[in-house]
Length: 231
DNA sequence: AACCTATGCAACCGCGTTAGA
DNA sequence: GTCTAACGCGGTTGCATAGGT
Image 1: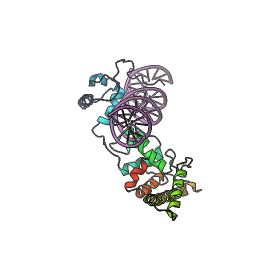
Image 2: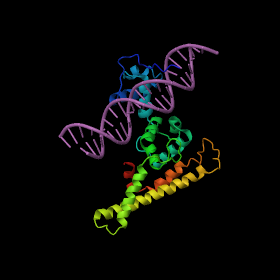
Image 3: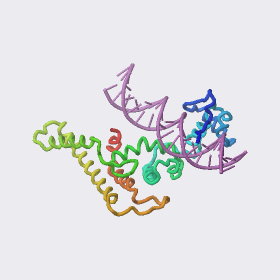
Image 4: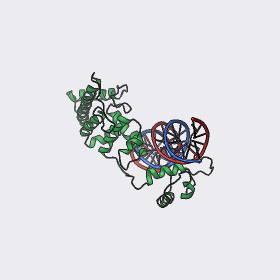
């Protein structure tokens, strides 16, 4: 199948960010006339650009029912849950989140949620615990070990040593919690019991990346959590 | 203050699907 | 049934900006 030729034949194709003026023109036109044919729309709406671009701008930013702003915890949970069931079907996922567009969800997933799951030790593609092949946890442990040694020794004389041992204790507790969560998470996954069937409407209880996400959110629901993600 | 790097988000591109001639 | 134009989706790119050096 040949890809859409769209309006590439036009050398004067307008690309790049939309200006306020162009947004107003496009919005006014669609409100007054409907979009009709997207291909014909650019000239009619006053932007000498691609119909695809107009459609994209309208469906993702100008539509009146678009909800802008930060995703709520509940929305995050829904996205993770649906992603574990549907995969990268962003438009399908978007139908469960009124006011959110597939593009917005996709971007949010790639920039925030993926990282969160990786930090939790969950593979964002399979939603299963991933084997830790990276060395970060070893670095974590070596740092904690060193700090713990300092903390337990009688040589802890400086305020720095004291602060470090306190941080180490907090870090060790956090790591222990993570490991506990991962163990709990892995138990049903690694058992011989087959996962129960589930309908697409009712999200599976076996999509437990959301369960661990919930537990994680509870644990990390303090001011340190925000900085933790930004390493 | 200037430069570099990382991050987030808006936008584009290519391909599959659909509808209609 | 076939062909083609148009639409819609998902992956990717590129720009703006914040933060770090």
